Image (cartoon, rainbow, N blue to C red; front, side):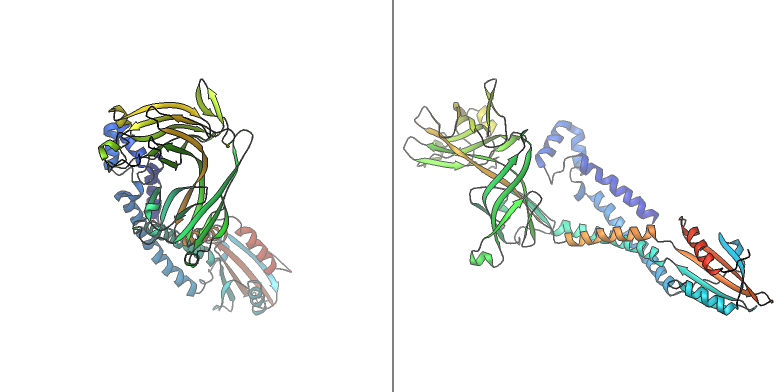
Length: 497
């Protein structure tokens, strides 16, 4: 038990870096920034796996040793408890007056009658009657076996919690995706459909729970100070046989009301805005895109982003890389000018406007390297391969014309929602283990293990000397009151102490 307690302390200590330092599984860019900022110290922490705490060798070793320690602790205790359940209460001590609790009285009646009365009073106790050599009769009683049972339940539940958490890390997965609230759909058919995806150790993304979600509308209500009051997404979903029959079922998705389907949970995390831009090229062809922009101010939902366009009809790759268009800048749902800079005064869509920079040149989107959808590659700007050709504030319906005849129009804005899909088949067992831990701990703290003995000895004058002794097996207050109450009942109606 001492070893298990030490390992529990070490496990809590080992988990602290996971809370204090950025973790690669949650936010790789933050880890890279931390390492770059702290130089050699960051590189040392990286080699020691401090940015992958819960997958590190040393954390797993502590976890495994705790598991082995608990098993080694519980097996002998369980066997000992099984022996206690089949064993009889111990013999009545020779001198009951040496016990912490004891009382004596001389009563009318035979030892058999008084012992029968004691047996009736101690109903519910484990007891055994014995006849002693001098003609005395005694009762040995014991109660509170459920205390050790609660202790064992607590530790077995802790062991179950450790096992289920470990299994959950192997088979669970969690992914986030942004879906436009204009009837756009998301299907849980593969990892490529997610914006970010964190698989368990045994998840390869080929066997995800099949279901689809369609986001029809998103409504948000705000307090006068701009603080969010309620979020609600009007969605339809289909799973199981609905996928083959193309049946959609409605659901109101709210922050604290996730959709549970196909063994997964779909949470509403947040929302934002996706401006719609139409670019009309000099040859008359146009392209329209609605791309989410990310909030830079969570209170007012001032957002930034980049909507990128490839020119149509250009087959030469070198020429195409000189005519690609990116609309970047800021979007304000409630426009407000401060020092001639666009900002937002309220998160709701009251007076939308966008401050756009139109970039033309090589966006690097066909280079084979991944890039953020929210921004352009600044190295291309620094190298002169991408340059700004226009800057203007636009209201919905307004447009800006470039020097080559290209026209960029701000059509409007669509809301988007951020969804999180969580799959963890072990969560029920984790909950069951946690509940059993609480119940077992409650039993071990509230139940008192105690013993009580009654000896009835004839005094040779037709009366009987009755001695009662008690002993608490645990250092816990309250048994003295119970003992005196039982003794008072057993030693009445006449009592000479």
